[in-house]
Length: 165
Image 1 (cartoon, rainbow, N blue to C red):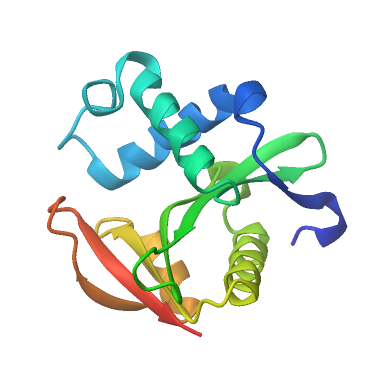
Image 2: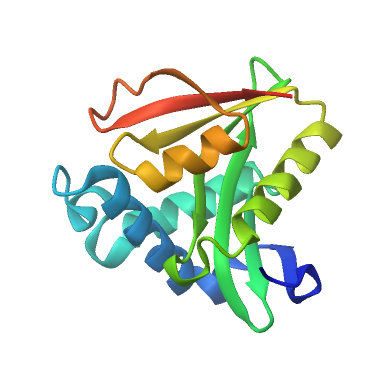
């Protein structure tokens, strides 16, 4: 298990750390879509469209992109927003931890940190897309109280999970 004092949660500096963001999204994309979709086709050559969209996302939701640092390295990323219509609910398009840190306890720290932020902002629930073939991810979310809600109609490999808190 990781010593929590070596972990920091910081708002992402996208101008400085965009290469990490693209790398994380590429790996997450591969987990969620497998061979069904091409990262470069969906996110632009070398992730350019993702980068542009993430900058817009952060402009609209300045709180919504968090990097997880372990010592001097970025090891994870959370993207989330509080829904505009139902302001007590959040959507988490990305919850990512690098493969070498999975199972270390950092994922649970990330989860706890995110839920704390959501509660502080008046949320009592959240939804997250999870690949149905990502057994480890599904097990992680179920362990933390998430429940299957429905299939994601935009992607045949992804289901939406919901957590009420």
